[in-house]
Image (cartoon, rainbow, N blue to C red; front, side, top):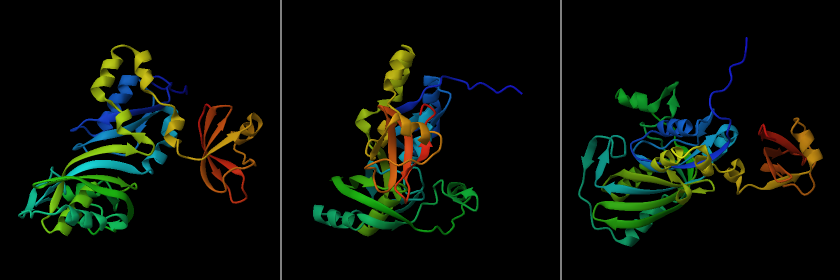
Length: 304
């Protein structure tokens, strides 16, 4: 039986998309994939339809490193609506309770936010994609079923109040993967004594990538009308996703053996962990430092 040829262009790299409000991450991914006519694409962590901001789209071989971007730290800008709690901890849910909002001093806000900075335990919301018994929690929530969830350890690197006007508290947050900002907003409201939900969220950073380098979907569509040459200028090299990783430079001889699955000895290599591999200015993929100090292939690109 003849092998089916892949549909679309064989292109690889990363597109930094500024996802619009009201669109799912998968819908945004499919739009970008069609615009580039790429044969393969994936994103690096969902944003809810009510959230906007940075959504790196991996094309072709870049999908091999998408999970590492998924695991990287993120940054967000969000607004907490004080005095109102909802069923989903965001503006999409039904109102559960309303309370008056006191006049909080800047120091009171700072003190409350400090309680959620550092390593903390967070219980995932029912309206999330986490699976329990093979069922996503949000499907159970839509059936009116609430189940016990295990707390997860997350790390809040930084949590700052940017603006407090009336019943709106704007915050900036830098956090580890797996952090639910709407749960954080709900917990902040509970600590303040008035309750809260998240009514705006914008992702500003994923790993080494910043929102100010992203392009809006409408702008991408306009570039697509000019042809692939203009559109492809938006594609970043795959290795930029690992810009903050230690790099191991290989000789062509060492690269030959490593690309055939062999662990190799590299002078002055890091003592442990994952590294990005290159040879003669060519990105090969991801390597892992073994206990004996050798460098082993972990995730290699076809071009390697």
